[in-house]
Image (cartoon, rainbow, N blue to C red; front, side, top):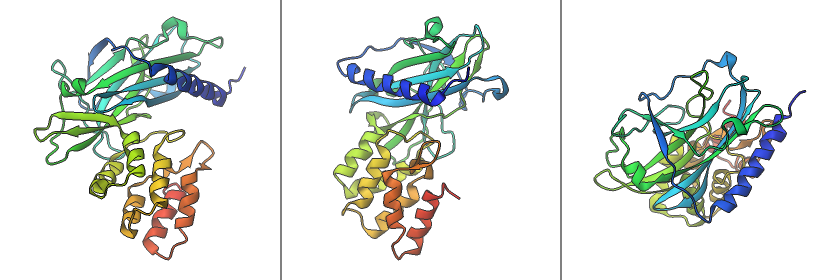
Length: 308
């Protein structure tokens, strides 16, 4: 019998949103099994034998400047019979959009580590009536944890750094990753002090949203720089598109600011869903595309056409 993956995905989203509200009363620090990795992260999976999957990773609770709680949810469709799937995650510095940055490590594995999440609800009990896996876990990312990590690149004078929490599904039976690098991560904004030590961290999307509510001219270059570094993620249901729309329709931006913001944006943040359904941000861009400015029209066309 064919499975409706859109329904499965919707149910997973509802379950995650409901439990997010319950998690605000407290959380448990995870025990972690550290596995050696290279600076490049794990090798891409051998795709011809892999199951279908739907995966989400998002900040469940933001607790600046101390840390954040990140939720991973995964639906593995038609997994190999008898195979055991577990959740892992990696922490990667986001230096450039579309390019894998350095994978952070620790004293034991300074070139990069993968963390095995041992509170993931799953194992043998994760199989549903159709034999599919539905795994879910929370991760505590704290300032102290990041301070103990290695392989940070030379930041120079840069004080704001974006790090990606990358979720992964590992088939322990076959000893291979089901997920490729950099799939639907959650992004954190890390502030470094003058010595290069982690000073604070918070949800990147929350930072952008707060910026849209209270515009600060001095932080605008930081916004543009960090936006241009973001990697791939699913914008559906997230704050980033709404925050960008709020800034574009506000009175704080100068004409040159509008253009800088448009150039830092990516088409996938504008067009939502598998059918390319337009968001409020897309509708606003259509209005901006009517202005008498060739560069603005060019950027709007790029965003609305999916980059073509």
